[in-house]
Length: 273
Image 1 (cartoon, rainbow, N blue to C red):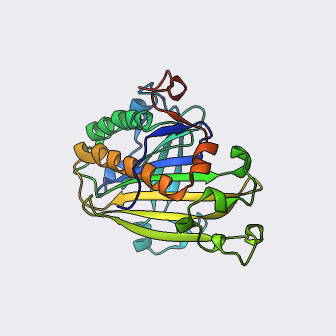
Image 2: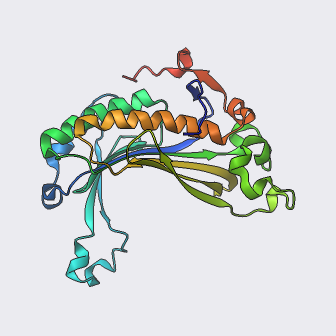
């Protein structure tokens, strides 16, 4: 994999908008046909860092709610209920349906904290629903780089991003400010992880009225994975995600985000396991 080695750090100007881990399994109909009350009782009490007292449900299938009743019966099998259990501040969410369990956060600080949550959730899932194995393991990092947040000029992408990422933004024909939308997608095989790949999506996007640059990396494998082996695969993905992000950015952007070593007291949170 062509991504450089680098020393792990934590950015005080954190570009991460969200981090999502999704673990898919063969359908468990009991999740769909009965309210997951036992699962809720287990996650709404304090665990590694969070409790998840808030609950909401939604229909998942990519079909507008008003259209769903009009669909033929066979299409109904593609639509399922997702149960969302969220922390009181809404920054952490566990999502459960008959196909998957997912953990997402808008408050990612460091991998060890995220893994500690997974280490509590997975035994609960195993105890209540006992999935045979995971059919897909995925870890997605969505970075939003805002010039105002790192005190850089709005049109300075050529100084913040490496040339192999910039594409047309590196060309001299137009000023960067003239581009309204640029988005690129690439699928990269991870040769040292069987059946794994990363979907890299990056480009310009508007966020809260400001032109930003998004670097979205989705690491995944469809290889059958034993439940006990999921976290070890996710650790590999996490390590590679850091290297891929560094491959995308320049040293100037790295320092503009104010990196601190993992051993620095500022990198610690008292509630982190």
